[in-house]
Length: 53
Image: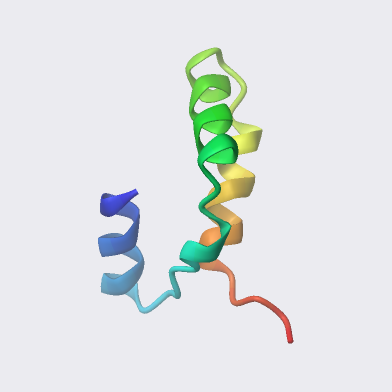
């Protein structure tokens, strides 16, 4: 996630660390290694998209 934070900062995107729940991150990583990238994709999108007020 450090790389993602640096990348987001470099391109001017937000980094919403509030969505970094340990279970969600771990589950998304495990799923991605098993071939299902959608949970990790959704997590990354939630991290870099501005939360709506």
